Amino acid sequence: MTKTLYVGNLPWGVTEEDLNEAFRAVADVKSTRVITDRETGRSRGFGFVEVDDEDVERVVAAMNGTDLGGRQIIVNEARPRQQRY
Image (cartoon, rainbow, N blue to C red; front, side, top):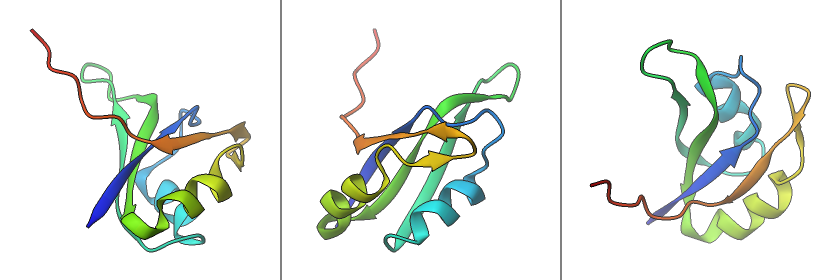
């Protein structure tokens, strides 16, 4: 099984490949997503990284607070998406 990690405070210019490369050094990355604004296509400053269940704690400990593109990123386990009404 896999778990999704939230990655916040991303630099505006970060790509999914940049995110994958940064996290690949710590664990086997299943997928990465950088969330973009629908209208402008510009990054919203956060994204998600999917890793194996057993790697979650190690990845969070290793990556939270590290520098990516000049910004200190925030990494934690993603919360389930809330229903919109």
